Length: 357
Image (cartoon, rainbow, N blue to C red):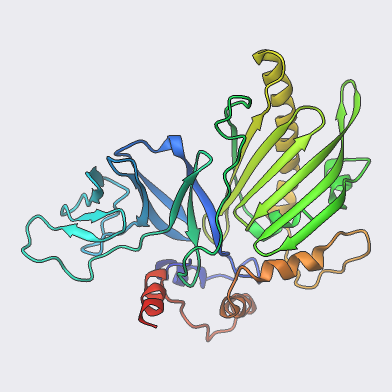
């Protein structure tokens, strides 16, 4: 969602992309162990200021950050009290669903004194929110990853980047097989032998050849994409490795990228750590090779493709499903500099209209 407070700022310069900035889907905002009972954290994602907290009973909530009373940011000084959060300015209390439940000095609660609550799930050791520009409820779920919490696998090894890019450009790498040779120096380009694009998922299996100090090792890569925000890659060959990758838009320019690696234990702990970290370091290196391209490239609606590029056109059609038609038009109009671009409604207003309808 692009909040009304960020719209004026975004219109002051030409957008980098002629496509909508914030797709529909589930997106990671934290790791579960980063938020203990009673903790409060400010967030900024989708161009919106948010507050995340965990109630004393352990429930996670993500709300729009600014108190409707006089605008205090609940993420800066707000305190958890029981099942809700208390504003640091005048002690108004809001529950996990965003409802105002207490104003300590008033006899009557203002009827409209509520905050927009974002759908939240806590799964696989991560906290995710659902984003939909029209305020609609979640359309799909995030699966449980069997490797997570499994004693046969290591705890997560985490890596994180802030990249100036778009979710769609990053995800496009899944089907762009030609770049592996020229960006990553792979002599043998991975060849998918199965690939299925069916909104909101992509499933692909690819033969892989891993270069090691002891020679080349044949392997296989399985990729599951669950929208633009979350994917799972399973590598087999050297050591069984699973990477949960999340890409969450911060604002009109940047994305928050997290890789969470787990490795199937082999031999002793030292062997597992040595082999696993060497392999995951190589995967992270490939992302860092992609980063300068992502951060500086232009987006063409009709790229000049050739045979051997991979199913780029099919992928672009898959991508279009993550945005409503009006959002496509608005993004193109903003990019083209059309002056009469209608100001978008806030997520809260869109939800109110959906309920009224």
